[in-house]
Length: 345
Image (cartoon, rainbow, N blue to C red; front, side, top):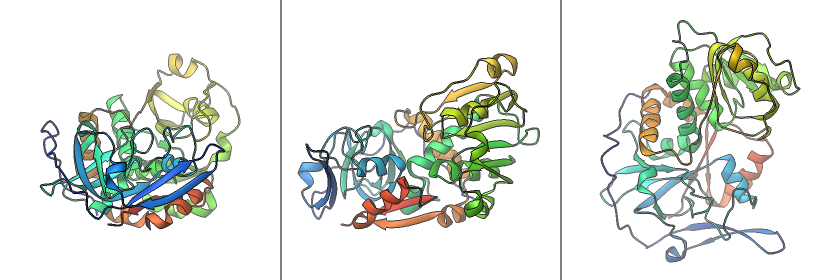
């Protein structure tokens, strides 16, 4: 079922709430001096409220790759210790408005959404479209919001209309960003090719999301020629590194690539040939610091073009007691799709 609802005017200030400090549950990860990692739950709201102008009663968060890294104590994500993880926070303001805050340093250098009450930056918070429940908004989370930013970036930078376009490639297609990007592009009418290292295991899953073709990631892992057969109109890339270099070399004249991940590598060794001989555009997508107008457009795209039945089908739900194990599974590549975290009151 395609979502069919809109957003309120994103220029209107988000309602601010005082919130309540009663019956709050908080999940904490802490890194000791010897590097060991511990997890615990507490019910001390005053100690774990982060910085921000808006206080929300959090009902759901999600498990993204960044969250899994924070749960493992990765210093590249876990910038403070102890830390409340959760780069997403979905909940209600004092007047009952359902809102979501994605990124903005939550669960990295400020306390995040794995708690019943949290202060968040108002600029990074938007009202959830009425067609989504709180759990669905959390299932979308940073990953789905990032996927929508990527699709908007492709459209803004000249991706041909769907009826004129060659297939659009999505790398890391079984991950959170990739899964939702596949569905959004398919519902916009584009032919989608999904790239995954789990072709045999999850090919049917990707087809159900809307992919018309599924390719093995192994074919993109070794360095290739600067210009290869041009077969894609554009791409959403979550891998970086050598796979991204190969993607760029296979984009048709005037095509667009949105880069938003570094699961393979942050390094990019390529040539200028795709850019000057095929007029290819490489655009970066930063979901953490995006201003509110970008966030509003992304959620509007999700409201109009994300299939809610598909979203529900790719979503798994865990509790705070289960989130550390789920994070380890995500890092080890034993999960796919989206994971919602319910916050215990």
